[in-house]
Every structure is written in structure tokens, then in C-alpha cells.
Image (cartoon, rainbow, N blue to C red; front, side):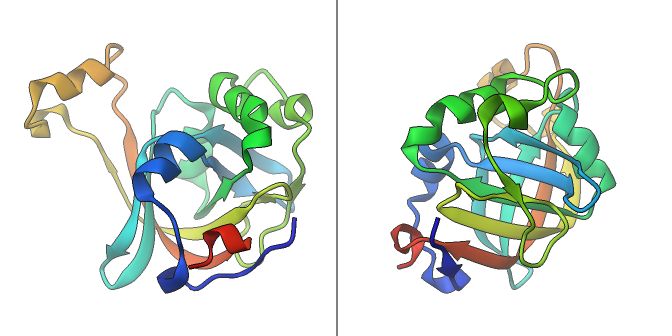
Length: 175
């Protein structure tokens, strides 16, 4: 995949579609050691916080990726072309605790340009992030009671803000 650096100000995404239709891959861990895990995410945000370009992602503590998000300082988001939808479904529905999802999907982890967390060679967009904030969803803060229906197991997400430290992508993502 031919990617080039993209300045945050030049990123061309439709934010809602990026999360709900693109299903980016969230990867946390350390590529050189081979200790990392990936999952598909459908909820999050992009923007500016504390004068920094950021990505906000949420991970349930029951997910294997949660352990990697807690232990490591960096993560990546990778947007793949539509042809990889079956791989994205596997990455979002299987656990890395008991399945080698990378082998199952045939995707190719690669070293990121700045952070220790890996990216994927098949990506059209790679967003490299350094964690700058972490918190937990607190149900007492829900202003709409129906939000709690997203948590039948009461496994409330952990929220991570990552400062975007590098971004590369195809022309599709460069405005």
C-alpha cells in the first residue's frame, strides 16, 4: 500500500463513518518483542484536546486488548480497504487470548514509523498515538438511561485518549 505522511489538519474523514463503517483496527503493544494485540473498534472520536490532535478509543476490560492498552504507552489505528471486511470481522469477534488472529486473517503487522505499537501493511490510513489520558466510564454519569443498555454485563469501557504523533495514508485520507 502506497502511503504518505498526512498532517492532522489535512486528514479527510467523515468522523461518524470512520468509526461505524470503516471499523479501524486498534493495536496496542510492542512490535519488536511481538507482544501486541489487535481488535476492531467502532466507537471513538478524533479531534483536538489540550491543544493536541487526538484519538479517543474505548476498550471493555473483558477484551484481551485491554491488557495491552494498560501495559503499553502507545497504540495505532489502521483503516483497511473494504476488501478486508472479513478480516475486520475476525479481529472484532475472536479473542487474541486463545486465537492467533493475525495468522487467521493473513494480515501483515509492520513496524510503525514512531511508536512501538505495530501497524498493518494493508492499511490505507495509519494513525500512531501516544496515550495521554485514561479513565473509566462511570454509569452514574449517564444522562440518558438508555445508554446503560449497551452494558448488559456491566463491563463498562475504559477510555483512552492518544495524542496523534504520526499519520500516514493514501490520497483517500489526504484532504
